[in-house]
Every structure is written in structure tokens, then in C-alpha cells.
Length: 412
Ligand SMILES: Cc1ncc(COP(=O)(O)O)c(C=O)c1O
Image (spheres, rainbow, N blue to C red):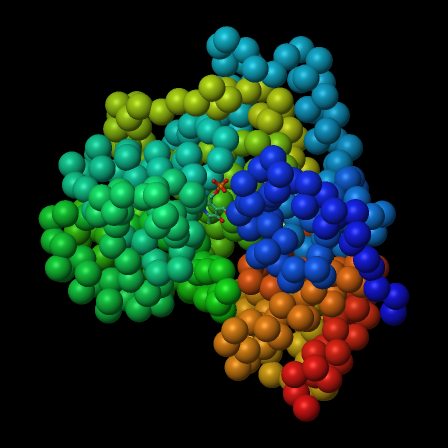
């Protein structure tokens, strides 16, 4: 198989560093991928495919870290956005889309009675903790070790430049260990406002863990006994597992749910939903942002959510993701390579057993990128409704070669 070169990408990366600290920051930096084996800049995308500045084409399994649930440049979503754009986007007051969007979302998401909108996932996870503190009059928030809830100070994984006080009220437990959670709650009795969880555990660089309904039944008991709220951070899983919210998929009954990413197929929009009894506390909580009210992402989101429902996107993603998983597991097995492929088929994570420094994963994913399949070595992947059977077949040809190369390189 021919492999790509990335001359223009890395030349542009050097140029970027002249003007932007680190050139590219966050998880999109080539330093967080396999340096030299991935492109740095993209020029266009269509459906499940993306093209870089060197003219290389990829089947994209990162979907802009989860936003592109029905694919890039979806004609219906973009037509809805364009139609709104012709009438304006950022108004002095909310647009007529505001009520349409709110009513649609509240009716769509099971067991939730109100909503509010923002831009990034971090906006709504922070807002949810503030509403919970206002409502309960308590300060502490419990999250899972390895759980990601955004880049704001209270939940950021970083420490540089962040006063420790910002994290003073955040407690952590192991997602799978309910005994540990019970002990943490007992130690902090009377102080815990909320437990924030992702629907299933999807930490970066680790196996994923999928709960069953009994997990959430226990969570409910613990929350009720301590009078603390359950906030579900559905920002990554949302609109991939169940159109009515991932809590329906896992049998949870959250007090508030946070959405972002896939809800507008790449247009910038996040939302929170909540139970009726929290509406007053939500109204009392200061919440705003200059771009929170823009109309174009709402028009795009309405179109996107309707397509997901109408076209059976979620079962389609499940079937494609299952085909990818079965194919890769079979390839690894037949070559005698031990891998761990975990998570929901719509957003899986793969690693090589014993690959503690991730060198095998970085090599494997880097070789795949050089052959036109964009996987991430540390982060879960995303299958979208725009992927096709042909994409999966082509991907499996590439992964077969990459497993073979990884075996040659690391298992002598
Ligand atoms: C589960 C989860 N919560 C919150 C966030 C933060 O969202 P954003 O980056 O839009 O602020 C992310 C982003 O990756 C996420 O995956």
C-alpha cells in the first residue's frame, strides 16, 4: 500500500508556531498524535471523508472529536443553516429559532422539562454544577477519575496557571467502584451537591466501561439518600446511543443532562436539560455568553436531530461500528495480537495489551493515517451515519496491514 507524505502540513505547522503558542493547541496538536505520521491541517470534507493540505484523503473516525454525527457538509443541515444565515445569525435578541429549538429538545429528551443553550460543552457542565449548588445549598461535586467534563478551571486536567482553590470542591472516585463512591459520600455527608458522570466511562487512553441498569439503580439510591443531584454529561455520547438521551440507553434518571458536539453536526451549540423542580434554581443562576443565542447553529441542530431520527442513524452507526469491531478483533486474533477493543461500537477505543507507553498504538494509528484511515492513538474513535460499508471494508484492509506492521515492529 502506498503511504502519504505531509510536507505542506508540517511546513504550515512551523509557520503556525510563529503566530500561535504551540502552533496548534489541545488534542488537535500533531504532538498529541504520532508526530510525522498525521496531517496537521485539513482543507475540506464530505461525509465521512476529509482531505489535507497535501491533497491526501482519509476516512475520518474522529469526526471532529464527535461533532460530525451525520457527516461533513450534510446537504440538508447546511441548507437549513444557509436559509437562516440569509436572515441573520447573531441578533441583539434571541431569534424565532429559540422557542422552536427549546420545545423540540425538551420533547425529544426523555424525563427532562426545560433547556438552556450555550456554545461549548464546558459552558453547560459548569452551569449544571452551579445550578446544583444553588438548588442544594451544598458545594461539593463528585466526578469519576479520568472523566472529562471540559476545559474550565474546576474540571480541567491541567494545573499550570490554575489556582488549586478552583478544584477545592471537586471529589473523585473510580467509575466502576460504587463502594468507593458510598465511602466518599459518607465522608462528605451533607456537603455534596451533585454527582457528574458520563453515561458510560470513556476516559482518554484507557479502556471504556459500559454500565448496566443495575449500576444506575444503585447510583439513584446513593443520590437520593444524600440528596445530591445526578448530572449526566452526555456531550460525547449524546445522539449516538439513543436519540432520547443516553440515559434512556443505560436506564438512568438524571436530574440534568448536558449536550454538545453531535447535536448540531459541527455547528457550535451546546445545551443543558433539567427536571422541573430545578427550573427555579436554573433561572436564578447567572448564565450568558455573546454567542449563546445565535440562530444558525439552532437551525442546523433542528435539521440534524430530525435526520438522526428519520434516517435511523443510530442503528446504522451501531451496525457499522459492530462490523468494524468484529473485523479488527478477528484480524488481531488471527495474527496472535492481544488487543482490548472496548466501548460502544459507535465510539470504540482500541489498545494493545501490555502497551503501557502506547508506543504500539501510536505506531499502529500513525501507519493507518499514512494509508488514509484517521484513527486516534489515545482517544476513542467515532463512527458516523455518513460512514459506509465500503468505508469499513477499506478501513479493514488498512488495519490488517497496520496490525501486520505492528507485529513486525514490536513482537519479534
Ligand atoms: C464528555 C465531555 N464533556 C465535556 C466536554 C467539553 O466540551 P467542549 O470541548 O465543547 O467544551 C467534552 C469534550 O470533549 C466531553 O467529551
